[in-house]
View 1 (cartoon, rainbow, N blue to C red):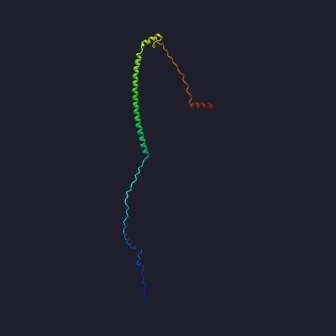
View 2 (cartoon, helix red, strand yellow):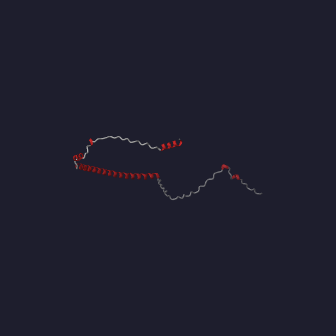
View 3 (cartoon, one colour):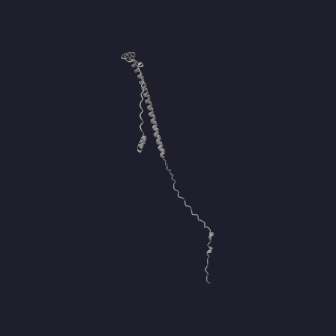
Length: 157
């Protein structure tokens, strides 16, 4: 007899849909991580310069220098004032001394008798007159507004 072929059915090896068995994942050997040498990250320090703050500091320095120079010049001015006052006191003293020398240098009675001999009279015996003088008022000058009104009145009259 002839041999019959053996028939194998696919259903024997095939599983439908969710019935599929999950294949176990084969763990692969882990490779060692390559490590880079650690470098410290250098922080870059940035300094923010505020222009308004810089201008304010410069202005404060200039004002401070100006104030110091003003105080020094004020001190010099006070010293100069003291020197000038001392000089004035010396001149006043010298004037008093010279005036007393001048007054002691002449005789008032001799001058009076000489004046009377010339025909002069004392001031109390002199005749006095009071005169009253009135100064005429000037007419006020026309302002530019008055001139404009005068011009327009003449133009439309």
